[in-house]
Image (cartoon, rainbow, N blue to C red; front, side):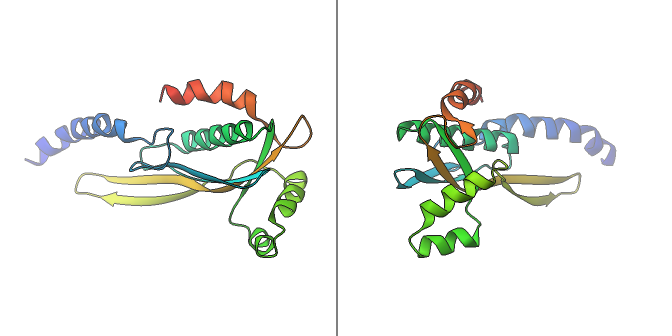
Length: 169
């Protein structure tokens, strides 16, 4: 019996992988498998909260974030944008003081290292295998700019690059 289990394990893992591959997060508003939620907080600033599930790579979640930020930017009449994480106490303080957009524009002009997703790992144990399951996501401010001044990313270019890539996944 022990020998049968070790021979079946690779087949079971392969079958499980095929069965759940359709469970990866799709580019969509937040649903059962993850996705994004967004909101404009003024004419130049939006918020995106994005999450992937255990079957979605960090790279795909980052691509989904970049595409949604690009689409928000264009939909609101802007061409360029920067992303800053929400987990910023100074931003929360600026929001309470009613000065969040000004604070974000100043910070985006000084530093933009790209989106830093948060990844949590859950480990599933069984008799035959130990499987780590990673979930990526986070909350981000989208600071938008008109014309070619400011912003780390060009929205139209990213839409052209990422929309076909995510449509195929």
